[in-house]
Amino acid sequence: MARESITAARTSNRAIGARVRARLSGLSEAALNRSIQRTLAGAKRRFEPAAKRVIRDSYGVKARDLSGKFSVRTGLDDDGEYVALAAGTKGIPLLSFGGRWRGPARRKGRWAPAATAEVRKGDRKTYSSAFIATINGTRRLVARQLVRGAGGARDPRNRLRTLTGPSPVQMVEGDNDRNAQAIADEVNTFMADELARQVLLSRGSK
Image 1 (cartoon, rainbow, N blue to C red):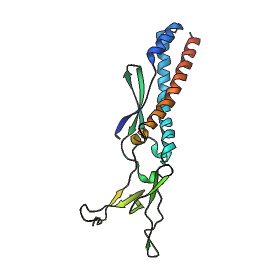
Image 2: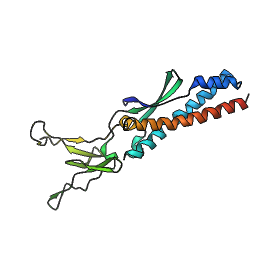
Image 3: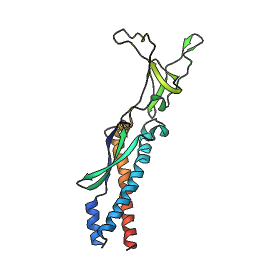
Image 4: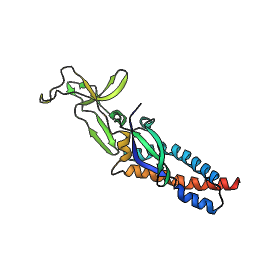
């Protein structure tokens, strides 16, 4: 099972305030609980699409390479039940960030330029000695391993190292948790609107 870490992207249904408003409007405890649970279920479905949109606004990663990298956790805090986004901690292959290479390595007696990738949108970088190769049937952006303490000499066994970019949890955090806040804001807005809608539906079905 892939390792995950809970991010700062989380939201709460503010159950206490909702209960007070519901009591004033005559909504039963059971009806309110149904409204809250339906709202939480909707919030869970919103988190991963929101995370993908926010991440791809600032990172050059492909959407398909973010699939399956997130899960949603629930729990209790002072605001009642909350929903939080958990994201994978393993770095995503650099090739997924628009990796490019003008290989083959040697062309007309000259070395091809090193491979490039665009981790941050609009900031394409060159990775020294990197190139794209197919290993065990999978295309990867790799670099030859060097021997430690040998003045930059290549590993005599010609081993390759797959280069990776940031992990999903690092991209959710973004700069000072800005991405996490943007994701939480989107889901919070949904929950506020959806809880009000569910309460109205429950009141109408009494």
